[in-house]
Structures are given as structure tokens and as C-alpha cells.
Image 1 (tube, rainbow, N blue to C red):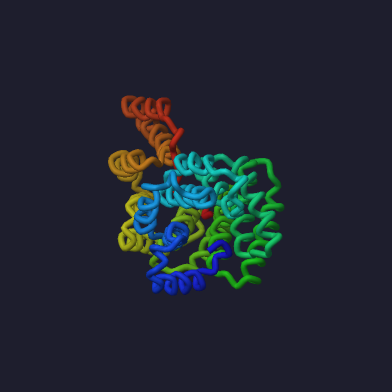
Image 2: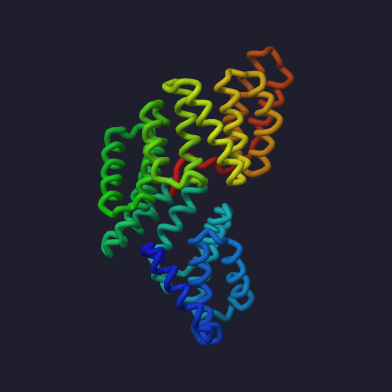
Length: 344
């Protein structure tokens, strides 16, 4: 699992399930922790939590290594369910003197990335990268360098030519490792860096390349499709008929994946494409913002609130503008998250 050999991990999991005595042997707890970690890697959070709950009942009696492994896997569970602050709190209880699993540094970096702490995210990613390079774990190197690039891009004064070179080198490494999954992720993030710099047509091309490497009916495809659509909307490099087709595709996949957030966002894109400003802002006020705020997307909600404030001010509606301004002034973003612009 550390080296991300998923097929081998699946084969080993199936083999060990046949050994019924493992559940009552001296290795039972260690086995349950590995199974919980395996389920998290598969995205099966409920199955993982069931195993962790079983161990939690006697966690005080665990041996030192197993106690730290339990904390590591429990912290990974909280990352998986988007409780990143809680995850970091648990990571900080791990005793690194007795726990030498280097992947914990990468996992800590991801946790800090998710709470918008780029310095700590970069620090722990660098520690992980040193180990992955020493042990020639190339797939983990790709993930870690990708994560580190996201952190350094928070520096607005960084030379973009350096960014381009690093992303291109990462894409070459993905090709050398024959990893389409990693390449799709790197292309998506490279597209976002172009988008941030208002290079909308370049961003669109990279998002499209990323989409071509993904399962069409997946959330990861949907994320890149949204980036492609947003780039086309703002950059105006696509005929409207083609743009509407993209939006309808996004709405269809969001419905299929039961992704309410992206159903709302693609509906906003549809109003934008047809230049229906009043309908756009009414839907934003009545449907989108309540959802964002109730699900913790405070930073994204603030961006839309600023849009609403400008709209109501221009429309000569001071009461609505003041209501929105009050929300911006009183907003608390200490536990906020953003919609997924980048992939880690």
C-alpha cells in the first residue's frame, strides 16, 4: 500500500481473508489496522471505520507501534471524511520516536494542505520526498512533488516559467512510470495554474487532456470538466453551442454521481452561458449559497457573496447589498474548505 501497488494489495487482502485464524492470533489487531488502511485506500470509509471502532475499545492496551499505527490510520480516516483539523490533532499525538512509517509525512502534508497551511504542508512533503527518492518509489515521488508544487504556487511572485518546467518534468515522469492516473492529476493542476494566471485557452486544453485520461462517469472527470467549462466561459474561446453541450454533460454526470455541489455550479454556468444575469443571481442567493455555507465551503461562499454584493449595488438594491456585506464582515473561515480546484 505504501508503494501504491493496488493490484498486489488487493490480491494479498483476498488471500489473507481466507486465513480465518488471523482474527484470533497475536497479529489480529495489526491485521485489522492494515485492513482498515486498505479500505481507506479503496474509498470504503464505512468499512474502515467499523474496524477502527473495534480497535478503539481497547486502544489503551495496544503495543507502542500498533498504538501509533492506529493513530495514523484514524487520522487518515478523518482526512477521508474531510475533518482535516481533527486529523491533524490526531497526527500530533503520534510518537515519531517509535513510529518509522515515512508515508505519515506525506499524509501530514495533505492534511495541512487541506487547512490552507502551505508552509507546513511543504515541510512535511519534503520529508516524505527524501525517503521516497532514497527508496525509488516513483509513484509516490510524483504525488509528493505534485503536492509541493501546489504549495510553492501560493507565492504570487514566483516565475511561471519555473512552474511550467516543473510540471512538464512531472508529466514526463508519469509517462516513464506509465501512470495515466497520476498524469491526469498533474495535468489538472497544471491547468489550474494557467487558469489562475488568466491563460484560459491553455487551461482549457490541459483540462481537456486530463479528462481524456479519466473515467467519463467519475467525480475526477467532473472536476476537470468544470474547470474546462469555467475556462471556456471566461475565456470565450468556444462556440456557445459547444459550451452548452459541456454544461449539459456536467449536469448529467453530477446527477449520476449524486454530486449536489457540481449540479448547482453547472446550473450557474448555464445561466452564465445564456447571459441570464437576474436568474443567475437569484439562483445563487436562493440555492447555491445556502448549500455552500451549510456544507462548510466558506471561502467559496465568500467569493460568490462578493459577486452578489457588486450585483445588488449596481442594481440599486442597497438593502440586499448591506445584507450580503454583513455576511462578509461577520464570516468565520477558521474551519472553511474550498471546492476542489487542485488534486492531491
